[in-house]
Image (cartoon, rainbow, N blue to C red; front, side, top):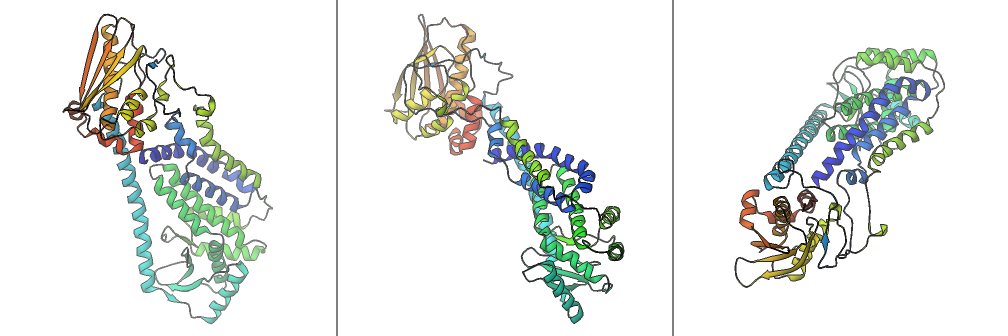
Length: 490
């Protein structure tokens, strides 16, 4: 499951990055056309998209397995069309190749988990430090005039929940903090009494508009996609647009004098350090001041942009669905026919879910053993005749008898041996006490014996292969890798 999620994660980050860049480069045009809060909503859509994968994206990377009835069929021909068995050097059919492949996946998972934990713990540690410092040093505002004006602003802004107002000695400008118990923090040095209502209104707009929750979403997206620089840039651009949206709402319907007063308040608070990630501050970096001033003095009417927002949502959804639309999702409803003597099997028909249902501890479980054998693919031209079980004495195992009408070359024999070896790995993982699997391939002139032991397989793997069947997703990936199509060349 972790491998599946990581694969979907990589696809999401690759598909969303172009949308992030497109939104950034179009933002100057969009600001002239739409209100600043439109861009905030757009960044929210992308942040949610980065955190919520689509099911079809997983199907794209891991092709869906076709369902067929679990009936046991004997004398079934397994043919794979014109597929030719690749060379040993290029085919990952042996145990060492499998181990290298999964070691690489394990390394990627470990690296991603490490980066995620480091990023998340770093910001969590910063938030806890700030919270602890706030508890030690913050004190309630006791100025009646400021409290009265603050309560009026809370009512005017439309906030229905309680918002606290406190002094904080280590701040240089007002700040809104707290998702569930919001508080507006003021610096101990005091603020200009004329500018203070504008500053307070700015922080209250942040609280009412849910900007603290948006910053949480952005932080979570950045933690999950820590390896993608475009996501980090998205967070920076979104934070800038959060402030622009707040400025536009504070000065909405005001005259030029009040807008100038508000701009001077922002200029006075410019610079300084930044607070924890889950907070919003009145001040901004000096590089962002020009854009904020342009927004404050922009009195042109703006469109709501509902159509543009719906288009963006459609693009984010379609970015995942469109790429995966070419995947074949056949099912029983598409007219699958139960296999017969002349049924042609393709690699996608290998039903690893059905194979897992054949898992058993004993060779003597005849129905499951035979069913598992019949679910496994073989090179074209081989027909199963019978299965003989060895259950009375050790080593426990069974013999599978195949026949073919073809004259077999050395290449054909090698191809059959490889296919049977791969099948034996899967069978050893499913049948608990099977120690030996023998295969006999008979043609008109000769019987070719092949023998595989659990000991040999597990020495090559360096592990108990029964562990493969303990994880459904891992077993599925192993099965699809091992059970690749081949063909006997006469």
